[in-house]
Length: 208
Image (cartoon, rainbow, N blue to C red; front, side, top):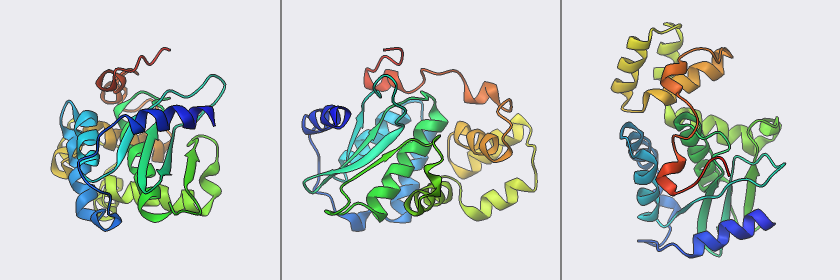
């Protein structure tokens, strides 16, 4: 409750550029958003993109001894997506963002106005979490493209960058998907990079 109160306080301090309409959240809309990941300031551009669609993005650190990755909630009729940056990396940021937006599109209602996620907890057994995971995977890397990539694994770093260029996404997104699917987290460590990649765009100190 305390964490949520912090999120809502930040959310109410932001100005939106449009009234939210769920119908705007088409596959094309998601593709346009995800393609912003190619740019160095992609997370900042994502926040601006969402504001233009009436959605608030809040970065709020998780509290000590809690393990939240993010949440989707309604503040009245305004959707709020909150991300903790518990894993402060580009691949994780983009997956959590699209996962929470999947909840906004598919699951948030006046009866279910808050969905909190610890993506390491095994909550994927819940139907809505499975649906949000599947939606995020499909939006970040289309199923036909992923099927083709899987036949080529393991990709060289050069091939990984070329695949990401063709998909018009950040290489870290593709690297993160391959690491997750293969359970080999030693792959592409140079592409994934160290923590602290996203927080500077939101004036968040990842070590607090």
